[in-house]
Length: 325
Image (cartoon, rainbow, N blue to C red; front, side, top):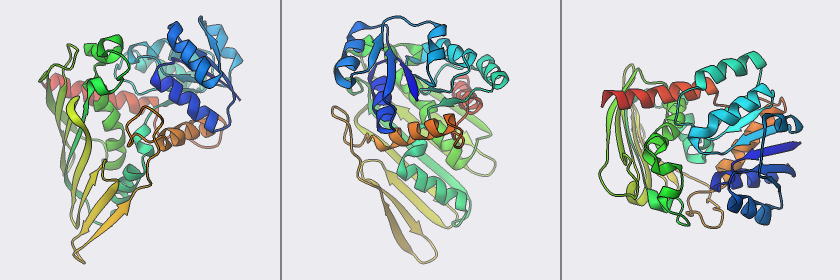
């Protein structure tokens, strides 16, 4: 199998590692920046290109797009027209995804938008518990995802990459990133309202905090995303009819209090193994599983769990939150 990776920032290089893990050795990589091409060539011995045209995609079996979000649509269109299965990083800009989805459907092309957290073992456990119905229906939930934007890429200034721009800002990007797993685990909300605001100086003129209320048919949930938290956090409290569930990313355990037997069950998660330079909790396993799922789907061995249509719908929730503010 021959793979083309477009974009060689931290995510593009991570995707190269994932492809290698799954036995893909014929990898060509492209980036407009010479320094990123050099790093990729030095670290992974891949063939790098300083130019790329739509015709170049024909020589590859799969395409991975890891460019900034506001550039996804360009290479996504190329891959769809070349009828090449394509994996694309999480989106934050909705247009022109509608038109691209229609083209992909006409060309019968697999488009696999990233849904990394759906491959996290704790989120898989949480989803399984909810979908099983063994503790009754959801009553309510609250979820907080907090990070510190300058910690994302400590090797460069915030203003040197896309998270510093309002339309692709760090907090704005994380909202759909989190919603993608939440709608799978909890279902699609009937409505989403909320607000966004700038609360601190994170080195960029962006809204650094989003707060949303999600209304479902018979329960409600809240979501807070920020990029001002000096200690990274992902924390969930979920109340069901016959149980209460809590999950703290750092603790590595999903705790379930069962009301009937009045006991707590702890679902311990596998220890995360992080790549050098990343936070210890940002394990590689979920990224490896995600790319593995894409490669199987591209080879006709199953379906990828998140579609471009799903991505568009998630971005519709982001738009509703912003419009309500």
